[in-house]
Length: 132
Ligand SMILES: O=C(O)C(=O)C[C@]1(C(=O)O)C=C[C@@H](O)C=C1
Image 1 (cartoon, protein in one colour):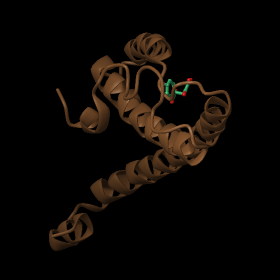
Image 2 (spheres, helix red, strand yellow):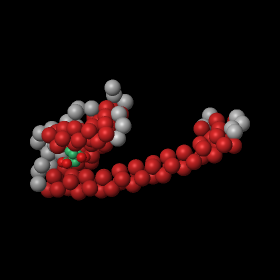
Image 3 (cartoon, rainbow, N blue to C red):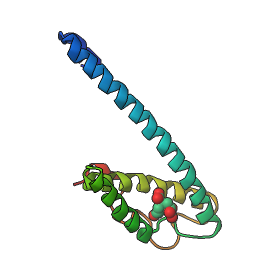
């Protein structure tokens, strides 16, 4: 049963319905902003991928990742967001970026992940969001 079927299947008090709708509108706006921000981030990282491929730089930069993680954990803490969640999310995104970088490098004839540090610095890779 979908969420909307779930809501429709039982009587919901009008004021509760209104509050739920108001909150969901906000959630939808936030989700749209997240998608747009991620799209912009990937536009930037695609350019980084091309720059790295053109100059034979390795796709991953674990030292940079460590700095990003430390910074994001601090930001999360001050925003009352679980720092471990923020770290997992960043690792998940970066793992995808590194895959893009590797593909760009392959297409440029540089081979997959030439040089040091393929994979994300924390080594959490694909399962970053599901891992502990
Ligand atoms: O800054 C870089 O060198 C990038 O390639 C971007 C990025 C990121 O997505 O933030 C991705 C891979 C690197 O390991 C570090 C950071």
